[in-house]
Amino acid sequence: MNEKERQLEKSWIANAEAWTQSVRQNQIESRKLATDQAVIDEIVSFNPRKVMDVGSGEGWLARALHSRGMEVVGIEGSGELVQVAQAAAAGTFNDPNSAWCNRHSYVASL
Image: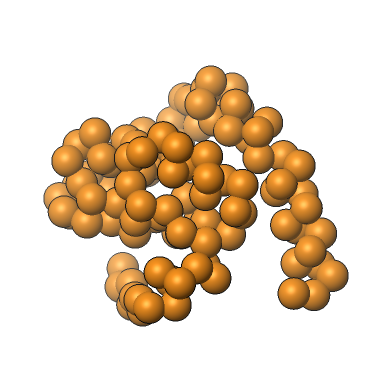
């Protein structure tokens, strides 16, 4: 891990709790007004059974999709946010360096 990556990791560790609170308490106006629902609506329009959420953060999207009957795997670079997302128990969450990610390869097509 280089110095910039270490700084980024430290930042996410320091800010994971505040980010989680902001997302879970709908404190980000643009997300509350449109963004979150637009993302959900677009994914639901494809009627998937399984979804991979890359950059899953604290797991908000996984929870929303799981409540609609979808199986969700989240990939998140912040170990702190992986723990927070796992605690909400609405999917499987992994750090990109985890053994799970090392065993699986995915190709996404849009």
